Length: 247
Image (tube, rainbow, N blue to C red; front, side, top):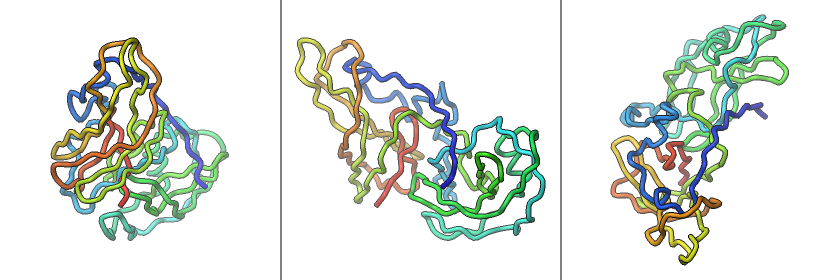
């Protein structure tokens, strides 16, 4: 079992406010606050497709002083959602640098092993450097170019179940605010999608609401029909965070 650290930004969700029901201004509504959620440059045509990790990684500022570590092979074969690939590795020392750790504290050993990670296209097994710290720290033993913004995608305070894809039909769980405004009936929500060349933004919207005070939000499945196949595009929430897609 991998030990993880969460960095959880707080997102305030409006209940029945009119603004909370409008579609996002762009597929990157959170890019001003979190620029690493801007998906406009995602290389959908790259082979292999960049790995979009959904599992949180050790946050910068950990203390890791490396005692010894084996020399990895120059490349290692991995099975990705879009097929097998031979990817370049990094040394344990490069992993310490990549994770933004301070080189302080007792010297520890590093072991080259493997671990399972959740990605936006399902689980994958990747080589990792496992550092004998307390608690244990793990970091992918692959060059950061194999990933999309490795370790930079913020983790939000809710977990979105994987979406199911059947052709152009998506079944995806979305946040919505079911509480009615005073004097109004319950809001009737539907799932919507805004598509671009690199991403598909999904959100829940209701057309029968008027402005009112924020209320609670909850998550439930919605069906969404895409205009074109999802392909290698990233499925994201209205806040810009990626959603896993299953068969």
